[in-house]
Image 1 (cartoon, rainbow, N blue to C red):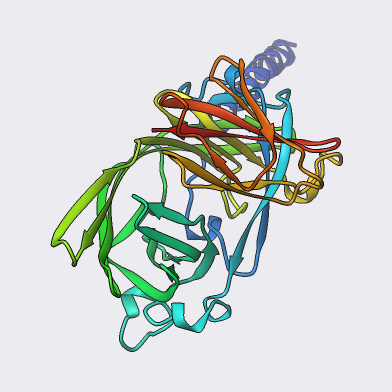
Image 2: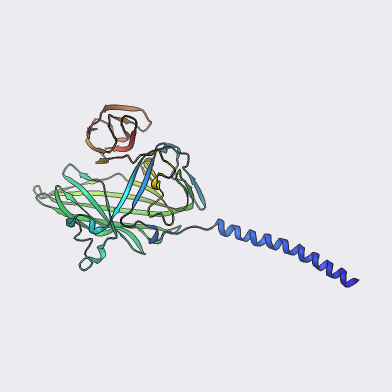
Length: 365
């Protein structure tokens, strides 16, 4: 009888211990999941022959891009969207042959052997240099993501320009807490003119990780902050003099997720103001009403004339707003617009069509 009581008591003790053990195991697993964070490797970066679609955000004022932290939650799912554009990558051997000399030559220039190419905006430097039909050449390795140079028509002459010091965008893998600084430059001869070059300094910080909600999807992300400094230099042989132009400092925030190829959110700021905000929106899954409409403009910053290119159907008017949203000027659409009379600052330039509008920020200097 006594033995039976002991067994019954032991059974109760076992039952009492068994339940908290399950709870303990469950509780131990929760923080392991809660504290998990991603790293970004070369497998998470672009490959050639792909199209990545971005949708622009309109009401950027309501988003504070500076906020970050560990296990942070960013939410832009309720922000209004505007137009959509694509980022296309190309195989190196599909770009103009005159541009490939340094970037498709494993025997002579193995350090500059590019992974893919991407079309880039034209450059207008100090009214003397015009860089058009430009391709930037990117190299992806397991230790870094870099721009090795570009090919373009420089004042109408095809040229292949390698960076004298390769522009490392960031080292790999990207892990939380990573901080790095790099400098790069190039200088190329311009026939019958002189030389043109650029100096680039980058300061990067991986300053947050967590979850990002966009109108397209939700992602586990890691956040990269880049502070970008650029200076253009032109030397004119005829006069034996050179001049430089320091571009405004840009702060670029990028949210990376595993397997997406490109940042799932990009916010570009200048002088504390968001001048561009866009999120990855592949195949318009969540935004069926967004058209693939966009416009390109150069130069930016602009001093006098700005040149516009758009696929907006029937563009009618150009409207210019100050940073407070006040309409400053409305003119009939043209692809060349004079802005020299504006005060220095940041403006919103909007193109209105029959039933669509496209907007982008410009900087007047």
